[in-house]
Image (cartoon, rainbow, N blue to C red; front, side):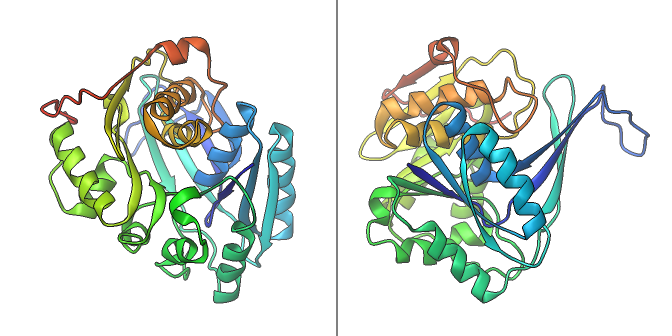
Length: 308
């Protein structure tokens, strides 16, 4: 069983347009509404690929009914901490070349009791706990650090994917895996990320301060894993329809394969490849072709650029 924690879930509305032009009227050729949020996306990716998953999130009674039905349809068990506010809505606009534009609402305010109950609900027995995403308004910025401190074995089974102050507050707190993307790593370390070597050095510094593994997603440039060893992987994804949720799928696949080492990195990249083939955020089941498209090596090309 893998538990995911989503402190700020969302109803994700995905619209497909021929081209996005500022100030113009657009007519969408596709509209898809899904129950989402980063941890919810991770749980659904796990279930789609036949791994037992339990999703913990805050919701009022009406929103929980929608989430529970949607997650149960994919095999995810759900547990809601009841709140009075309403789950936010996020809008994603997708263009034919895969370019995505997102508009995210802030979410409902959580009081101290609700935030504390989320922590209690998440730390029940699971092989792994994956905590993902932004925090709702009024949630303490050290929420993820509190979560790590509440787990006696956080360095063995806690994975975190967040950004900004919540991620900054986690630096120095032991946990098993942290998954920033390139821009989040640059913001966190206040370093310029031009090459794979820059990514490796920044991730190594963070690992030395308490994180067991640092998994850095680089978009179309692949991913870097810094743990006891350093690995770099790429995937030749040719059918890119929607990049939203690819990082969630990368983390889900990585943890599903044990959360450590080259094999887990390769599996994570294969799941990310499957995710970008899907128009929605729920992802797609990983295929043999997805796994064949992955190349992972411990001969890390440090001078390789990671941006335009």
